Length: 221
Image 1: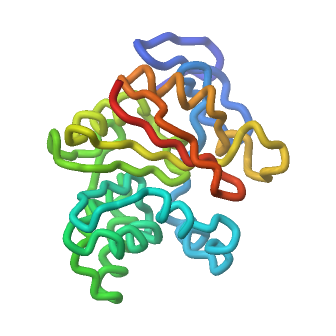
Image 2: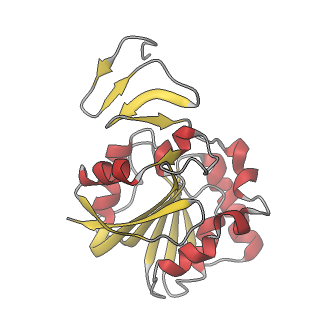
């Protein structure tokens, strides 16, 4: 059980008294956000998400090939996974989540919509459970800031990349006070870059096509 006040140091993490909506667990100076549980799946499926976030612009910016293998890390109920599946008809989407309840929602979506190329996959807090050199792209949509073990998860994701593979993150812009999202659910480019650098990734570009979110593309250094 972690103490509530004393600062403890570990190899990658430190612990302090949690702030509002934070966990009290810090990685490279950033307090990790609380996880949105499966009870919040309805927010992922909200009708106005398409207009608020404009995910189709994100999908278009990915430049996917029809044969690509894409890992949707923190897939939740599969809203983004389904959009990705339409872009890789000869490939597949590995929809990874750590909550069994979300995996069940994913399976229900696949059955309801008869989607053949989404494979739900239960990961752990410290690993996406993906084989080495198995994916062309890993994408995390508003999920990375909630990872309980971001360093270990990213090491696993980097290991899973094929040669030339890419990592894509969307995160609400922490630099923008007009983005009305809880502070711990927003991140800055500076913070994300230093965290990705720690696992051997370099920023390739930040596509500025989304109304509220960064769209980061990373490759191996």
